[in-house]
Amino acid sequence: MEEWNVPCGEERLPGEVVEIYRQSEPQAVVERYECLLPPAHPAAKPPVTEGKKKQSKKWIWIFLACFAAFLLLVAAVTAATYVWAQGRRADDLRDYFTEKYDDSQTAREVEIPCFPFGQGVRLEVLEEHGETLTPQQIYRQVNPSVVAVLSRRGDRASVGSGVIFTADGYVITNYHVVEGGQSCTVMLSTGYQYEAKYVAGDRNYDLAILKMEAADLPAAEFWDSDLLCVGDPAYAIGNPMGYELLGTLTDGIISAVDREVEVDGRYMTLIQTNAALNTGNSGGPLVNEYGQVVGINVIKLNSPYSTVEGLGFAIPTAVMRRVVNDLLTYGEVRPEPLLGVSVAKIATEAAEGVWGLEVVELVEGGAAEQAGIQVGDWLLSADGVPLTGSNDLLRVRRTHYLGEEMEIVLWRDGKELHVTLELTQSAAE
Image (cartoon, rainbow, N blue to C red; front, side, top):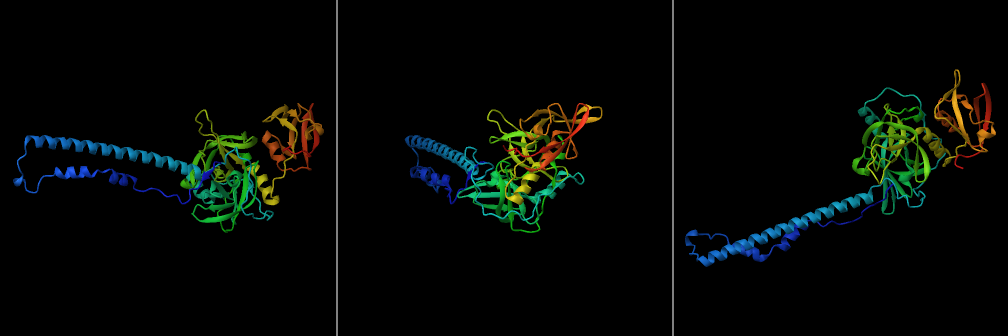
């Protein structure tokens, strides 16, 4: 999220070229030019001597030289003024619109007026979907739920996007869009603006919840990102460059799921997409081919050494569901439990007709080791859910909190074994 200065009361200097022209026009040149005009009555024109003819030609050349110099001066001043204006305009835009604050700055608390959490609101994430929609239908369905989020702090501001997820005005956005803000305005696709209050947020997950005092708003539908496959169509809607390009739609595919990406010194599990993302898209939705939100756009990968295109990332709804509902209920994210086991990414055949996730590493003293799980075992199911990939195990883990238990069925030496994991250690630790 870059920071932008909001220019206040700055006056421009209109008509600079006109002023230069008036000040640079020598009166002598005007007088000489008038002397060269033909008299009103040519018949009364006195005879011109040879010396006077030469003198007249001399003044003509002097006049032409002065006029040419004047034109060059005007052209130079005009060019310099244009370059200065363009540079100033770029500086103004760079200082005003933002997606991300300077990473060198320390974390700042959100000072936006608060709205109470614990109101019984929840984010619903569906596993079913309707028919495939055209890009035009997707835009008409989702764009009304996409908002511009302007967070202010003194004479500075950040601009991002957000998604309405309840008809009474709850909005999801990125935490870095509102971080350090003292006030917040949300603008709908219709142009209506509302002052928004801050419900809760978490910097590590880069998610925040806002609340508008409104009713009958178009709420977006959310779909389980765990059901995504690489190659699925993907669409991003947001406000690149802030208010300049509201409601921009870009398209692409799902390039990767559950991609581990380092963001500001911490690792996040994100969806990778080649749908174009730019400054101002932060907090906007990544949408599937059914017009359902599958992620919240968060970053675009950049490199100081080469041009990087088509590498955008979004927070998956499978992660958001737990985080957002914790924020709505408790005002903070409760820590996820640590299983203490690393498994193969996809299931392999442990025996004829028996498929599971092979255990490749254990955390010393972790829940899995204490339950008796060993390297080389195959995990067949967790809480009754068949494990066909590591995502299945993560999905079950997200349903648990510290102090709870998880039932595991595993395969070892040709036998099924049942073990219970005591979830006492936090993944954050």
